Amino acid sequence: MPKRVDVKALVSLPVLLVVLVLDLITKAVAVATLAPAGGPNPVFGNWFRFALVYNPGAAFGLYLGDYSRWIFMALTCAAIIILWRLYQQTAHDDVRKALAVSLVAAGALGNVIDRIRSDLGVVDFIDIGVGVHRWPTFNVADMAVSGGAILLALVLWREEQQAAAPASDSVDLTS
Image (cartoon, rainbow, N blue to C red; front, side):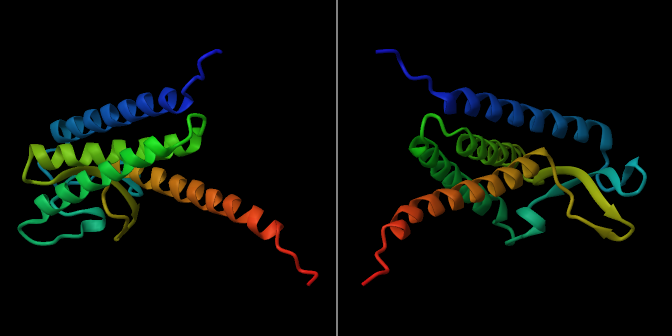
């Protein structure tokens, strides 16, 4: 009997490594070329620019005081454990779910590495917006977490819809 190819592993590990390495490299370049922090550097006019920002909090600048760094490291570690379990439960041929979990995990790892390395916070450098209306500054890890979370939500929603469909198909409405 031929051995079944584990497609999720063929997708997951390369995606996780590529995103993590890309995140770490872009952050290192940002720190080396955009220091000191704060000054915007236009890339495509004023709507897309690079600006070095250290975020001691979480997404969208959520800050929980002096212990934010440790709280968010603990939460990230818990999230990585949950993602690992979700990965283990993923079917060997479920590429979308494996991709989603890998993206979220890579982003989480990228940002937790920043928290471990420096008490300044996570390195953010991508700044988009128009005039004073700007999206919170972000990085490659944030894009991976956001994109992966959206994909994961869609995949899990679809799984739920498929699981509910047979039950509704078998309902006898004639009685």
